[in-house]
Image (cartoon, rainbow, N blue to C red):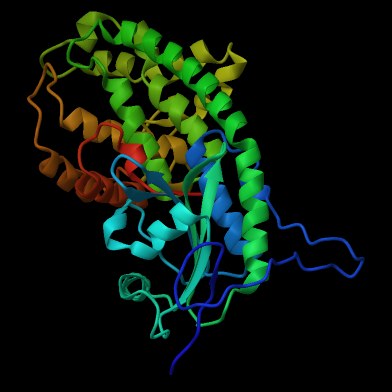
Length: 394
């Protein structure tokens, strides 16, 4: 069956132009204001774009939404934020789409227009229809996203059923995109300030790690792994902040452990092991005097707890262990296995992943272990790992 789609504002083709739309009126006569709460509290740009995707999806009754940024140098768009409703799925790995293969997307970015595509429209672009079908949807609304006066990317909204979005949906997307644009500069400033705090803490931790060449840069790697895992798990923004600080500071209590124990080439005695196991409480006591670091304390104290309750210092089990501590525990174990230590040589990443899976449900939160392995195997090198995952909020 032939279905028609519409396009306007400079995207040429067979579709008829739509008149300028207005927001739906509430019974009291005021303009309808879409809910932008998912963007509030964003601390970095991926959070902002993920919040925009969530706000758009909810406001236009869609099944999924993605926000992709335009890379002018590579002439491609790259996923950065997304939102899905019940039964919908999108990739958790960011994908790049060369615009030479998607002419309609390129026209929307270049011409400032919007386009609505049905997979049943005989006149619609075949490349776009094929991608929509592959993703499991029937209808797409694509609009340009502009920040700070320049084109930044596109917002793509999907429905399972072939039900038109219409002009009202475009108006709501425009309103929400304008809200995001207004907070763009503030988010950049906030993220820069946050990074200064984090970098200062990392520098101090690096100085502590210099005592042991075997664990130098360990905290930085744990932070990278843990943040990526937190994004993959889709934990809330506030929880990711505790993960970031906790991952950096998880071993800070080892400042109170003697070098003779930390660098001992053989197994520890029972007495030495008892001393080593005090470092979570030592770290918690040290950091408890700094209000800014309060949210890191549960991670620092509990990152050696086990899913089966046989860990330390408190013998917590299952979901009683804070999620940040569960994340750091899995990442800490992976890094320990894949780096040389005084008492043993490193094992391969593949073997370490096998060990994580073997410990799922006993030593580790099974979801954390399995998803960390998926991230490590699919996302590639550890450097800047978090940026290769699509951000979700709400």
